[in-house]
Image (cartoon, rainbow, N blue to C red; front, side, top):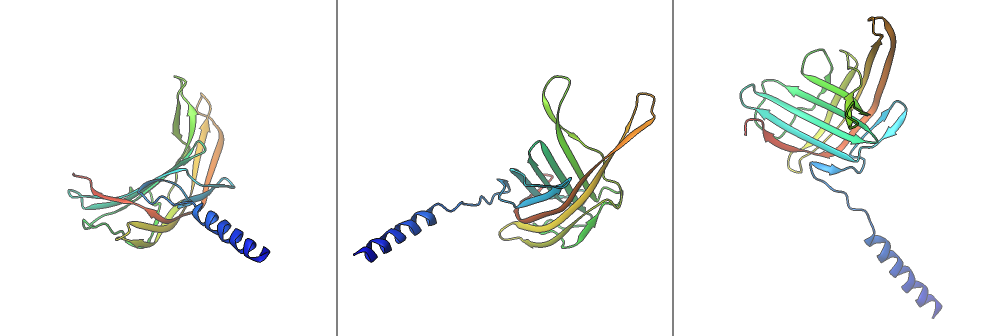
Length: 190
């Protein structure tokens, strides 16, 4: 009799725990379940809001993949632009490097209080040529999810009121990943 009670108890427990599994939201603007991650200045960072989009501009024939992730008063933004593209929801598998052109834009923001007392995101430094890259390793155009890696270093030079160099602030966004990141697709001209 005890064996039967134990088996019934185990079955009930297994059913209960199975029903408690966390659902992963898979929309293009979503609550993160580690679909986007990075190491920011030595600390693991997982944004709680993430948006990703592939867009196409009919006039310029430029396709853009853009990502924004926000959490803990920090925001990471990057976009990759491919000229001479076609109007499809795919994106070329390749490594894209910051080279001083508008092909790759990467930025790191921190939340600060402005003069009006409101909290706003302020860009922290700039990413110089050779200081960042993103790699698209996989894309599923049916499910509209994209996978890859990214890393960059933002540098901010601080000057005093006379224009003299005071210090340099370095922000390292390293070992960044996006894993089956849901994206939307649209035409910029619509």
